[in-house]
Image 1 (tube, rainbow, N blue to C red):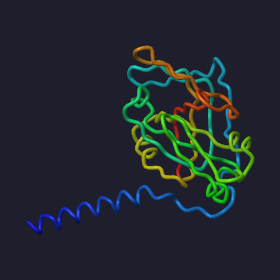
Image 2 (image 1 turned 60 degrees about the horizontal axis):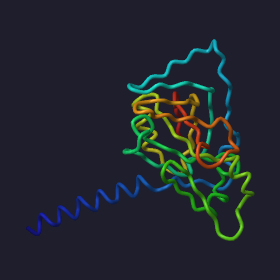
Image 3 (image 1 turned 120 degrees about the horizontal axis):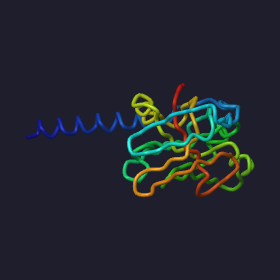
Length: 200
């Protein structure tokens, strides 16, 4: 019996260690790591893009590309959108990709929103935080991209290429993407069909 308990403790300890290592943020030196704002281009009627997942319809509204630092990641399994978008990333660019700035913020995600707070004074102006970060609902274009999105950790630098999309689905489901970076609150998140993902 003692051997069984020792084995259980060993297995549990190993599982806990692996989870802790997987969840640990990627350490980054000070400095801006993703200097450029996202690139966005309007689609023309001639640029036909077909995006498909069973039961849902996707209307691409813009080509979208960005390089950003992962500030936070949240997995979703049970809400209406989780069938197509199992991962939300809070992403930062410009000074919101700088470790010095991020270390002075508490960042978290909940219910498809992204939040941050600070002690005393904000490390950079609030308007700059809004323009230089966003919560994005990510729709992986294939199973490999989905797996890699789920494995991301805060501190990773990601380069994403794809499309901003509006979505409709079963039981009257609809989801419209933001197309600007200065909005906040409900409806301010980008809904991104991820066609290509590079991680460093």
